[in-house]
Image (cartoon, rainbow over all chains, first blue to last red; front, side, top):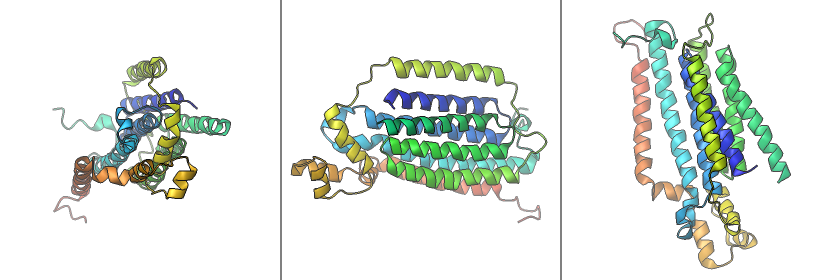
Length: 109
Length: 198
């Protein structure tokens, strides 16, 4: 269980999420893949905060919590994103009767 | 250390297997359930990384709120005939994701990381594990933090203090963002007047 192992697991999670968000047709599958990518970034931030030396560590010990603060902000933004994303999904389902991204062509013409 | 290694590999299998299931499962409902498995595995990673508060937040917000919202959305908009199909971009997406993965793994392995000095790792773990609690003087003395200045410094280090001192501007911005997003979501799903619903 080294630092590199955490980074590699997070990279694998991120790339699976990236593939899912690019290659799926269902909006909900894309939203779930985006959540996977958020989680991978959070793992990376917390692992870096634990294992690597922040430059300011000599001055103030609380700087080792910076990674965790960033992760808290990302979790909050993810909550906002999923609320808004699901609102858009429901609005699309009401107007198109479908949650398929290939049907969402209203802005193309 | 061995015990932690075993936990780490179990969590890794859980997270990566679950994530593959999320993007590949033909049934969206199963994908949403596997997403919960991934979230719990990530909470386990946070515990291993001495971020216990984040692990609790992860379970509360991701498993308790976001996953439930997604399951509601899956059930309300169920597309049973088509399920979770890939689009035309599947092969370019696989190639792109694989290339990015190769680049990220190369960076993670090849970089000469500047690790914490071994004598400071214990104190950093102490501060990170207790990011939302204030330790008493006796506990700190047991942990090897003896001088009064060091004890005061470790006691003052906390997530809440950082959020309302150094990061107060992002904190306020994110609260406004959350409010705006929730109002926006309500406006989006509100039935338009005259349709006779709601």
